[in-house]
Length: 444
Ligand code: GDP
Image 1 (cartoon, rainbow, N blue to C red):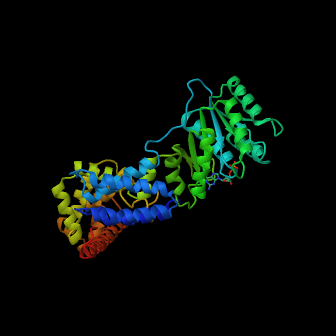
Image 2: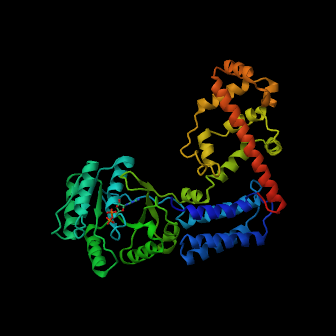
Image 3: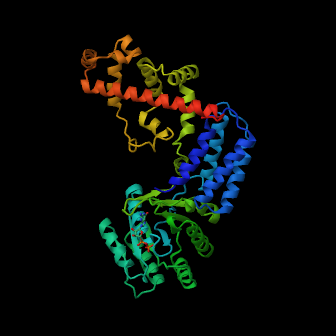
């Protein structure tokens, strides 16, 4: 998966500062050194890295301390905000012409994924925006391109306009737009020719198509796997054609992420979509904010902190934390916590916001079944006071009684008890880790 090593490095760095009650200038400096290296290793443009670090430093040090967050969390917040800004800030949407059809010209080097993306985009427009696009085969040089688009069109049951490979792309574009008007297509997606390298001839031809088609949007398709090359390609295309948006393809591959993080800053052109696979439905609108929190692996940790603080009684939270650390955590605490968490909102939404949750093995695609939670709650409520305080006394006959009382099966009771034990073990590990970190004088 893209960004893996960058994400890992940044997360490791940020973890060190997360729990800190005090962050010194030296802490920020050290952290920024590591962030800088991580970004450079991820193949982010060095000028972009320099600016990024300067911005974070300035903001992190100059910021007033907010009550709701620890200084460590605040630094993470700044990194998150800057990373989001770097990738464009707000999500940038595809153009809509005031008078249909909206003409979109797809440009890019050969092999970047232009033809595939043209079909994916048509599918996206129809499915998510209820549009009725027509595809235009104007790549007359790559022998298989027309056929490829036609096959994709057939697969989507969508019209493909083609005049073969003997008519000029300018003429094809012109006639295609006329056809779109006649047939009331609201989007015209023109798949233009690509080359292996940028050359003058290609740019001239694209200029001519642009003049005739008067596109509302020129989307440049670049292959994220090519890293800095993708950024250079984007720069040249942008200079010559004034590109309005970028589609980054192959973000499902193990790209280091440099292209995604540099292209907006270098070309000032927003990334509008990301290709996440070869299949026709694997195109996603690009959300800088989501991408940033994915890279930082904190889900939506700040929202979670804010949410938690407005709902959870702080005194109780501290008490609970102490209990967790000292292993006094009982089923009574468990029930209380369940109530508090419930008052914060739907459980799967909350879990999605928890740091590391998206990464934890077996928790991918986790769906929280509220019914399952109610079952768990029923089991716990069927325990006696003594059992809740000390689950180790729950023997076979007690298990049978609890299952009966809660209307569940013995297996359910067994499973819960086992999970509870595992959870306690995990807490113990965390406590040990925290203890070690403290000894070293580092926050956790
Ligand atoms: P074009 O020469 O730019 O038109 O490139 P194509 O559309 O023919 O794509 C080149 C190759 O990249 C094909 O094998 C596509 O299936 C593949 N491809 C395109 N987009 C993606 C993507 O987002 N992820 C992956 N894994 N492969 C992609």
